[in-house]
Length: 323
Image (cartoon, rainbow, N blue to C red):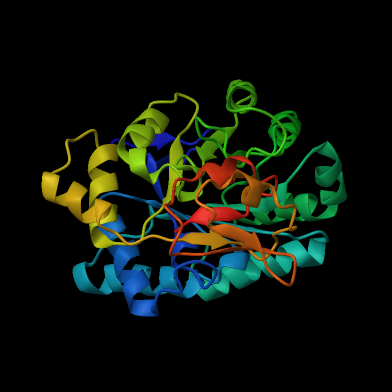
């Protein structure tokens, strides 16, 4: 994979970033060795950027993969960059989060640390103390870069205007699934603005939280061709999926058996615990596969669900995923 420079950070990254949420207890709940093996395969195939978060609880997978790569093949890890995030508000929160990430991954330095799920200039102001501490930690060399992750166009525009921010990790897919405050076109415009301001951009949810898996290859190729993205974080659950996506990211043509193996991957609808019970998805589902349970949360009848993904378009909280 040909590497790209991530904004003004000086970091050269492969266009495909390994998103570890798919391994975490929140999603796949992978056994440690199985998850570590997937990450190591990705590193062996040229990926050198790993996305995680304090929330995901995937630091042990990363540590195991990095240790195995070093010991088995004398594989270099100095050019592998781990990016993490947390909901830190205070300086102490930010410092604790970075120290935890370093300790639990076994690294001396992170590629970057982000304020998780920022929404606007107002949430950035509310996290100002944490942001200032990240600036200090960057100066100390504990992190190479700092920034935000977001599902909000307003946050992309706000972060673009802050000179201390190096990195923006925005949600984008052509359907606009998960964008909280506008359309896909509006988000892409904000991303372009941030890129012009010199921000390093690595995207997320190019497959719409799994809802675009049926057209995954086309959407991944399309996303990788967007000039503003240095990389795109993608969650991967199998060896075949890692190999297929790495082939695509390298500009190659995937073998039919890889495509078949990925297409055969069993998937299901996941409704996150932050569901607000608005009922929009229930009304949208023509298969009658969704209902509100006694706790007022949406739940799925797997016997009826056809994984069409239409419900995601009507979920204001983006809490419905295909995993």
